[in-house]
Length: 142
Image (tube, rainbow, N blue to C red; front, side, top):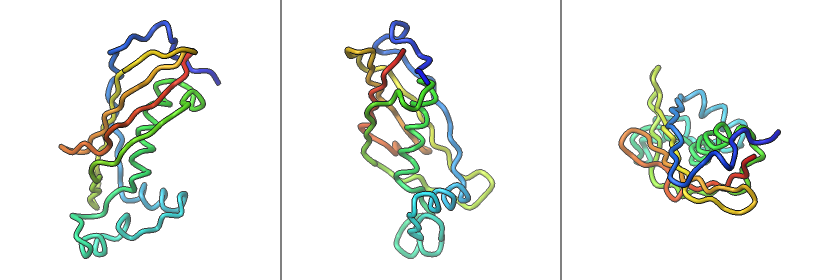
């Protein structure tokens, strides 16, 4: 695959529209199975509350993955992402209801580099909380 976004068509400061990702408890159970991270704070409400959490919380790496998904969907090619890093700044609390939680990810082209690469700064929020900080991806565009 090749990125569908063209390097010559993006500018520094260009915003990438926000996308909402719904997180429900069943997503966390599926992620636990795929990742091998069965920590009960991610699926057992009683345990999460017993250790001082407000409720079950999403895996940090699950949250990070939604940021990666945002970038690869925008670029049009997962292989276009050549570097990606974040810091975790808050929890995504996932209630046991039909709504779950929402992670909202948006981005802005922060810098244009050589070799058709751009730096995309991401913002990821759940409710009023910023859940990822210093989130940046380097993406090689067409």
